[in-house]
Image (cartoon, rainbow over all chains, first blue to last red; front, side):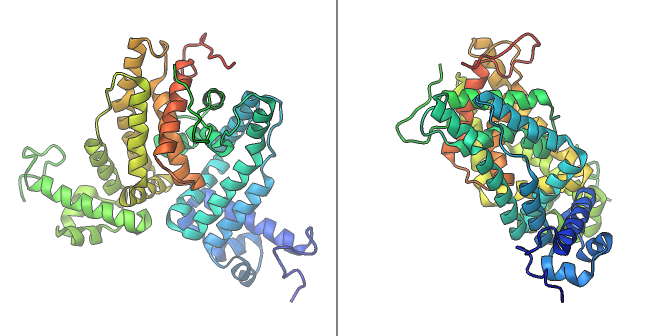
Length: 212
Length: 212
């Protein structure tokens, strides 16, 4: 038995364990994007990755286990927050990144597949929520820094702001089917910025945003 | 063979055909909410509804056919638009209606199931998009009337406004898992109203909304 077995947390991050994981997750992502969660089969993933079936079953156990680890890798490989010095520009960068991801064929199919998996599998749902928690936390300083700069009011809920930025893009992908493009991304960032500046996302009890 | 066979468009809307449809869609909705699209079985639906299997297969043909007709019924039974005379109040009514639907256990499970179905079945996707098209069209006059009243600028894209209102609620249901409540609904309506008033959703080429 090889000494890389201590995955996750292998003592040799570039070693065989890391390479096996990379291959397995790539094949799992391809199969998910092509055919969805319902058809994700660990034996097929092992064959596609050129890895022993036993290894795949021992490390990932279930299709949901594969989805969970794939989401960890997706969060790890996602781009860091923007830091332009302007709330509007930071949120625009965020919206454009989400729009780019959700209009890429493989990526959008992959997101649809993991979101569908989360509707019927609790472990996949937990992994999906952890993915968005990681992303919302990574970008939160864009809002926090805007508060520090005096662009946005104290008490602004950064998570609510960032959810408002990407939500209209996901709504198009998953619900209405309306097209996603840079224009929609920019409008979404602008709308969230205006609302943030007006205090709509302030969570302290006595703050009320004004609508003319 | 009974003369109600001309469904849809039965000559007797309250007749046997309508009753069969009602029973079948209720059972289909229950099964979808309980176990999801992957486990929706026409034979089981027929048995649950006390309807002949042949009838169900002849009229709905596939699980996606059932989902499509269920979405038609859901759109038919949805509440009409609000008409309060105020954009903020109309959008708040819309956001609260969506929040109420997505926090009802059966309804939220049902929406998750049909959205998941749409990620892997083209017919279900077409039916889902038609459902949201119906709802966005029903509520569009709230924005159009605001333009007429001078509350919102001419050229405002009502569909983009209404998508922005409900999107953060769907994002919580399907992506982040963050809780949905009346406060979030109200903030979403307020953010969309502010952005609308500022011209963010104006689609004419020369209109640019201002961010302080």
